[in-house]
Image (cartoon, rainbow, N blue to C red; front, side):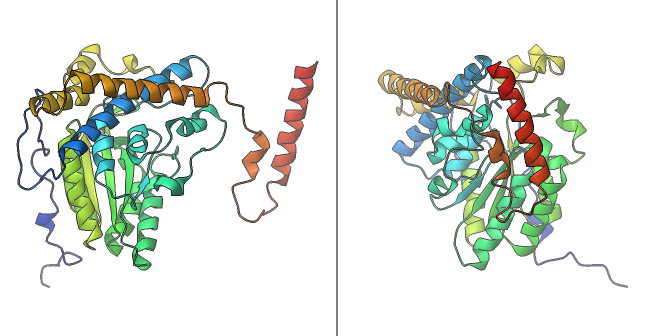
Length: 374
């Protein structure tokens, strides 16, 4: 019997990620040109990347403040992951779709989504108050990894309709240990769906370190098993992240199929505002991670290139502060939603089996309201 041949028509060696993450910016802002990963951005676009990252960090900090003041039930910070989210989202076209997890405020800012409306989920006012179709930005997904299935399915449908869009699913390193992303990448690989799976490897799945989640050399190596190329980039380098993502997006749009990107970054805050990271990681580790702050690095680059001066820096900071204030005004003391709406948006046609649950909740709410009145 002869040697078996690999499935499909792809040379497995072309799917392997590079030995080292793609890196274009040093910590001091020095830029290294890479002909395999060109940065095709003009000066205004380079400045826009900086604005998106600064605004993201400001609203992220304000959201934490709102939670501490009792205005949000919980919040998942992205501190330290600004370059990964902004660089990835900036590589998409306006018609493309983003399927986020619960931490993608940076991607939302880049897509133009109202930051205040994004926070209604964490306040419990409503599932989400933004229109997904306005900016092609799906609802936040709280279950780990389910958005990968949504992105793959949407991309497969677009391909069947000859709609030349690309979808991108953001998820964390912890989600690669779940079944849903595996199923999504399997289907996407088989059907050559135009989807990019963007893994933000922030080193920790809540309190579980990366080395307890996978035995693979990198998460990007997992792509080979799905018949798609694996990309590995410095996720704290916004230009490298953009260039790598743009390459994957262009390939997907051409009909060549999906890709998996691992953006190596670090979650500088807690997993959520309900988490205490001091229980599982050291202060020394956090101090080392702070040395690769993505915004500091990119600011130094812009200054070296003569694209950012003190006046523009102050203007960007003022814009970020104004957006944080506007977001705060949107969410502060926002009215709570009606708990009975819980049953209204699950099925198109009522199956009837919710009736008992609806009655139980109505009884509990009536009893609570009676206690409050008394």
